[in-house]
Length: 334
Image (spheres, helix red, strand yellow):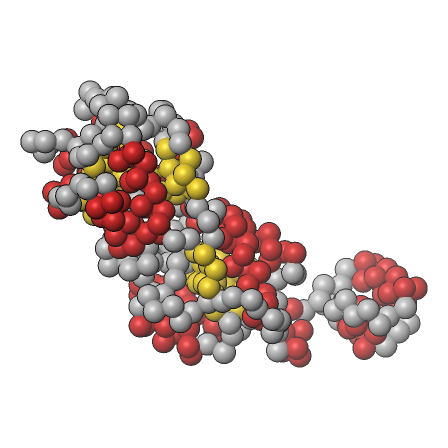
């Protein structure tokens, strides 16, 4: 039979209210009484009913997290930062993979809200009007994590993607490269994919290099699209001497195709990326990259959400964390 709070109260010789206070970590319980209640809980194998507690308190101590691609190392690191802070503040995480599909993202958001989560963290691509409508219909706080909305209306934690791309491409121009290609992410995402494209163009302009649309290919952040883009670049009459990729996976795809083609990295073609996942140091040559502080993005996002859920004072609702250029062996002077 299911052990109830009444059974624990009878076993410990206290009221049900006292058991409830102990289970909910209320400090207004004498140490010896708390000890008796915990001993009764252990003897009986009592497990508090989270659903019932949620109905009583109107809080479920759960947070919904929408992740765009659970197989991507970038988002796994963000999720680890979220989980660590959630544990610190005694929240449970419901993690939902949305496969980078807008319709699934909206469906998952609504499903999590139906489950009465206390807050929502959204990692995804472009934040559209449909996303904003779903967020506004929620009666719980929402924080954008590793992304932001175009008009800056939502709380968010991210990096400056345009500046990160500018720094990556500037490393190539500073090494003497003039013919620099880009493997971009989707340009329909104004705060990430398009922002990195704009950073690429701004770095070329700063170096006095004219923009050439033939040197830009749009990928999907995955390895295969890096391979396909590099195949296209190496078939050009005038090949690029350097490539900037908007993700580590695409950069590694480019490196492998360059090597399969019979050329060398970085002697023939230099490669640099944005992300700096663990894969960047595993590939040979090791990949130069602009590092996103992915764990910190997750941790700071979760901490911001806890403040909003608990109605604590918040210094700023839009947090931009610093990025860092990590120089390895994939870039050579020209």
